[in-house]
Image (cartoon, rainbow, N blue to C red; front, side, top):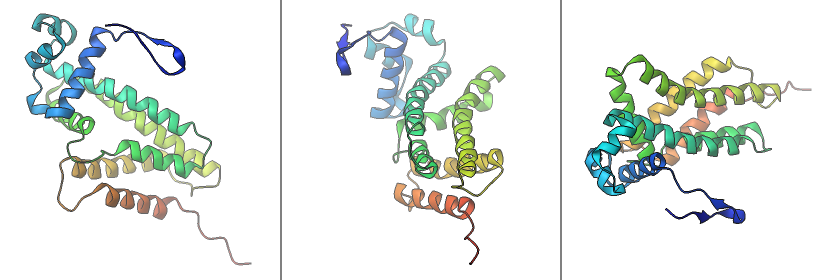
Length: 210
């Protein structure tokens, strides 16, 4: 594959075979859904034999997990950029939530998450640990925001670890409803529920009357 020139005129390195495979898998999920993603079909898409695919992934479960890790690496870069902005903590918290939730029904990254969660029921400890690390990256950023918000006097003080756990459960529940297209659930309404959750739990008490 020929190298291309990106922003700022710097030449971009050609994608490595593994990265090409993961990008193709994610594109296939976005276009056709998980049901139609097969090792043979992916091999045809990238012009690679089944033997080469097995060299990189061994099993479809491993392909799905590595594709999820690849997707989360890119989403993590967006999250870190959003959290590095010099804006109020609440704005950065809202930006994290916007990145966390699916864009709508059949969101490919969330469809992949649901499939990996489902397959983890029969996975070994090493696979579960890799999946857990992806989830904990979001958890740690939530904890840091709650701590910073309280330290800056923007939020009410809470047990940041426990509150982050409850917040992720809320986001996962609403996210699942969104990605499966549960009737009566839309993204704007979900974002409103999450804002209400933060307003009720993190808003500072009113200042005492003079």
